[in-house]
Amino acid sequence: MAWSDGEFQHGSQVNLELGGTRFGYTAALMRTMIIGEPSDRLKRMHEAEVAGLEAALAAARPGNTCHDVANAFYTELKKFRFEKDSRCGYPIGIDWLEPSASLQLGDQTLLERNMTFHLMLGNWVDEDFGYVISESFRVTGSTAEVLTTTPRSLFQI
Image (tube, rainbow, N blue to C red):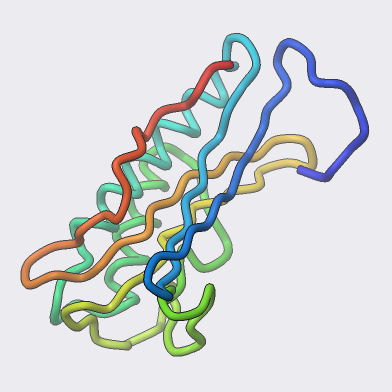
C-alpha cells in the first residue's frame, strides 16, 4: 500500500517492518495492524499467511533447499486461494540482505546449520489491499529457530 498523508480512521491498516541489530547481526520482523475490526478478507489473508509461514519454517532444515522452503509456503498459501508472485525470503545476518541465496522456487541452495533468513511474507493483492508478516530464523540441526517471540497475530488497535 502506498504512503499517504491521509488520516487514520476505523478500518485503516498499518503494515510495519522493524529491524534490530545485536552484536553486529541483523534481524527483521513485519506485522500487520488494523484500526478496528478487520474485514473477512484480511482475516482470511492472515490465516493463510500464518499457515504458509509455519509450513515454510517446518521445511527450513539442513539438507532441504531454499526452493523447498518457498514451495512449502506457496503450496500452503494456494490452499487458501491466495498467491504470491515474488520470493518469500532472503538471507539476513551481518547485513540486512546477504546476496547469497533466495527463498524462492528454483533456488537449489542447500540449507545448512546456522544459516539465517528473513521469511518475509508481504503480499499485495490489490492497489489498496495487502498484508505483511515475517520471522527471522536460524536453521538448526532439525528445524528453524525463530529469533523473536512476537505473537503471530493480526493486531487490532
